[in-house]
Image 1: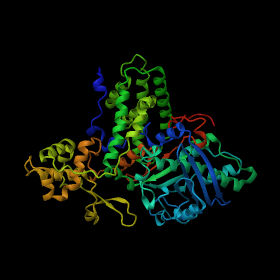
Image 2: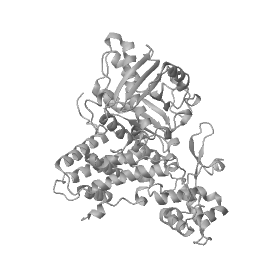
Image 3: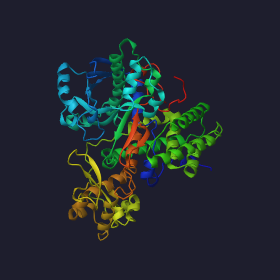
Image 4: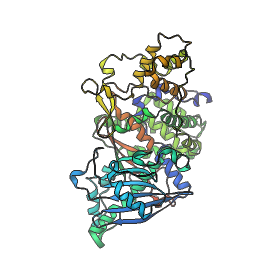
Length: 564
């Protein structure tokens, strides 16, 4: 279909983009936080070393991994523990782990190490200082760790099929930052260029953790096998990432940070609009797109899960990729607006998983066109958003109709439309989702149902004259302050709100988790229920020592089938 340049540059409507089913189908892209970090580390020629590796024959001790940038140095301080099998747990209520970590601002002194030894292994039960930027922990993969140790100790390489089936030797169960447990607040480091994009502290911590885990498994194998032991084949090591188990604690983040969330989605949408406005693709751009699509088809064959819904989505996704490949093969240098045509076609022919994958894939040949958007994805939360008390209630009502029209048509008295309630666990101070009519939790409910609250505000405004202002209304009804503030935020940030019922009986929190983790750069999503998921981070990425020699920005699209 013919498209003019104005049409091509239009962003997709929030009513379309911000549905949970679509957000839960997003894939990693050039604007994912892991890839943003690695490009910076490579472009700025960061240097890495391991000044300390005090690990004994049992694999217990600590190590320090330093990353030296143009202006500052950061050090991962890693502790390896002797954890009994019966204490190994991915649950947030666990109190012991195979390894614990902190990212230190600078190079730690012996006094710093002594302090960290007393606190980091305790995680929440300990306290760190403003010299520390993150706190994290990880457990070994029960399926893979011993296999790799035994193989290396015998002078053999591990079974590549087992490596690919699991994907990681350790998985993190939490990576905390931004002021938790005494760590530095984000405001203290937000002006540093290396941390300008979101979650760069956490992504750096996990990147260095991956190097530590590789070194640790080789060290344990050496202690076991002596002269017979060998190191991991570099190509096998590259395929190993860091796993992660993420549950409900992460889900409300997108609701609690509307401006930040808006900036993530807006950057991705703007990037797609820029690429769709390309009138003619070059031969090299088409070749790269086709190559990465072929790699993705092969990669999808390695994407496994026991979760029925995700398995069904993967099956459809595989078929859609083949259909996409057939159409993409017809693109050449004479095709008018090729990427816009592909996206328009996908909305008619592909499922959501395939549509959103295509949005990510068309960005790949155009780093020079879209990578600058990484600098727009953060949000300064220091100033409190002030409610515009002078806004006429007629204007407030109009915004409600435009943004929350979907919510105004819901029967909020029906039990199935408000079956769930978000609350905070007293034991771990983590968000939970409970059954409103089966558990005594309603009085502890958190304001994480903006659709319901917006509908209640709209009803409350129905008897107020349009020329009265917001301040007058809130003086009489202060209970609506939180949703008025939110409505005014969304009026300025159109992608700030999830436009779905977050407390319905059929809500899938996994969609929120998937969306956030995709922006991190995660792949191979493996849901274990509708409330928690396992993923892999940095699989196939270069290690720190590789960044200066053979960095490949497309590492996230592995070349499966390559001989090892």
